[in-house]
Length: 465
Ligand SMILES: *[C@@H]1O[C@H](CO)[C@@H](O)[C@H](O)[C@H]1NC(C)=O
Ligand SMILES: *[C@@H]1O[C@H](CO)[C@@H](O)[C@H](O)[C@H]1NC(C)=O
Ligand SMILES: *[C@@H]1O[C@H](CO)[C@@H](O)[C@H](O)[C@H]1NC(C)=O
Ligand SMILES: *[C@@H]1O[C@H](CO)[C@@H](O)[C@H](O)[C@H]1NC(C)=O
Ligand SMILES: *[C@@H]1O[C@H](CO)[C@@H](O)[C@H](O)[C@H]1NC(C)=O
Ligand SMILES: *[C@@H]1O[C@H](CO)[C@@H](O)[C@H](O)[C@H]1NC(C)=O
Image (cartoon, rainbow, N blue to C red; front, side, top):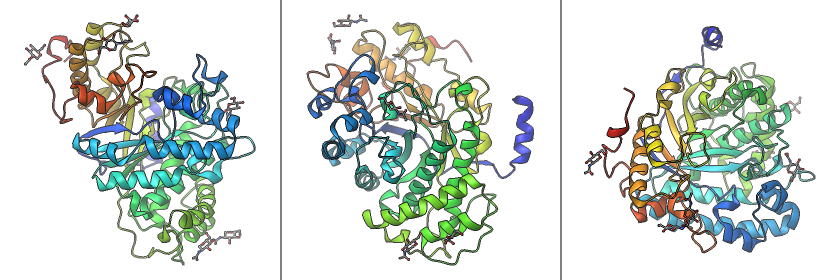
């Protein structure tokens, strides 16, 4: 692996890493439980909708798939529309803005691009995309920048997790068919981001949330990483957005953007067959969305002078997310790229379950340096929270919040999971350690996210230099 890196770099000389248009430090929250509904975050509402929660989530109605299969399309569409309207609101955006949040990561399922769903065998609610459009507009109005996160991939990217949309051990994402669907999703999203003003605050797009950690079980994921970046950059070049080290070899003879996608798909020799197929397949989907979401620019835009946008930051989980000789996403970079790591202590395997071990672990975290040594920089921590394996005291949670923020700010910053969770009798104390808004209310998280209760909190625990 090491000895091949030089060769890979030579072969792909266009794949240069540049600093992107990122916030100088990310102080963020996830908008989780919204367009990908995870029942554990809203147990009362989920039960009212008719869902259930059980020990093995594949055996009850504990995912969007299971719900839609059980209740049918019409009921699912109606119930989820209600959820999308009420879970993330203007009030929430106002609170996040007042709390100084500058970034929102929005988890999305592949099914939000509805023509990608094979309705005979796949079951998901319809209608989410209009809510996404409203949500990103609210965030843009509040000056909060957005990362679109492909969180739940076609075919399911990791087993037995409701966050993939379908709790199942039948993992099918790492196949040609589903990689291709993910590329089409990407082409559609990038086109909306650049042509729909509602999406103007989006600065990054994340390829795959939490793939399987054992790279032996993710065949061809490295090829997908390169195709993902190529798809993003192909759309940008068609729009006249400059891309470092890459240009089109196709004459575009139309102001109809969806037709231009087809022209490049047919004629370009710059992009491989997978990328060209994704551009071609995205065209008719976008032609429909032009009407559905009222985005006239998808059908008529001055491609000659170029749209006034900059390249998005392509984003991957960092190389050290995986083991067993994983592909390095740094090898796929063309233009600005960022890296994401998620760190939770409460599931075990990170530190012994006691306060001192947690502090010793977080205060000596080497992840930013270890990733940077492999070219995976800038790195941010796109998911973390305050949960613990023990009953944490208030005193500990002040320290735990400070120490994590200090560690993650050695990189590009942090994005808390989640902006909120349900507050109800059945949810119990869930919000105390899982909700950013509640964490600020309770004082564990400082009102100004750049602040600390005690910036020296790690001093007694640091053992490395
Ligand atoms: C989704 O889950 C069901 C079981 O609930 C399973 O039969 C099906 O194969 C799963 N689909 C995928 C794509 O994994
Ligand atoms: C633009 O091109 C698409 C094909 O991608 C076609 O369906 C649509 O009718 C065209 N629209 C206009 C306004 O030219
Ligand atoms: C692309 O090629 C196909 C097949 O030859 C053709 O039907 C289609 O019109 C072409 N699309 C464009 C936009 O040129
Ligand atoms: C935490 O506190 C709850 C309620 O007081 C108790 O039921 C539970 O056993 C405690 N958990 C641990 C790990 O001590
Ligand atoms: C909930 O948190 C409070 C401290 O804020 C604690 O006293 C109580 O035991 C907790 N309940 C459970 C069930 O853990
Ligand atoms: C901050 O934490 C350090 C290390 O534990 C401690 O020595 C110091 O007294 C704390 N400062 C305040 C103001 O509590």
